[in-house]
Amino acid sequence: MQAEKCSTFPHHKWFGIALQALVVLAHKDQPCTSAEIAKRLQVEPTLLRRVMAELAREGLLETKEGKDGGYKLSRSAGAITLADVYLALQLGEPLCKGLEQTTGEHEFGQEMRQAFGEISEGVKNSALAMLGQGTIEQLTRRVCDLKKGNR
Image 1 (tube, rainbow, N blue to C red):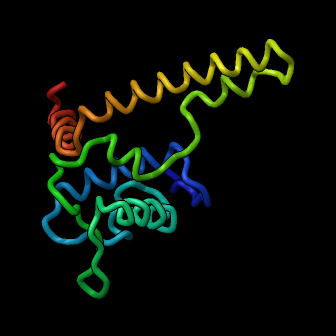
Image 2: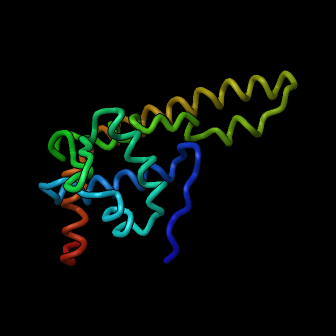
Image 3: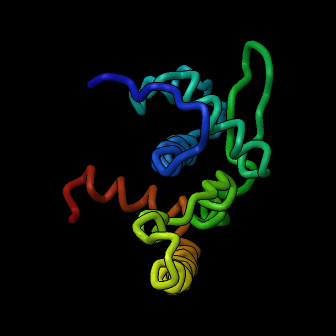
């Protein structure tokens, strides 16, 4: 499998990378280097460091420099919701941006753009509500269950 390439701007792939990295860290008591995490996720270390920098900036991770340095969760995995992670990445682009891009500049198009904006906002709010119910700890447990074959 080829490593995910680095991207300058946050996008929705960053969310998946961030969740995977946090699940890895949930299993660790000591700081874990970006190289270790990148190898486990099979992503480019530069991309991972950009994602991790956003999570650290938003207080979800602690970072330690030096020989014994790396990343670790700033609080328990049960106290970090999936919504916290999504919001920390400030993905910016609405989940349904494509809807609004299909409308024209004419009167009907503008009316549809407003209606699509309302739909997009509803989808975003629903997604955040759902993500707010899940935690890194729950995701970690689910992955462990799948590994054990408890589907």
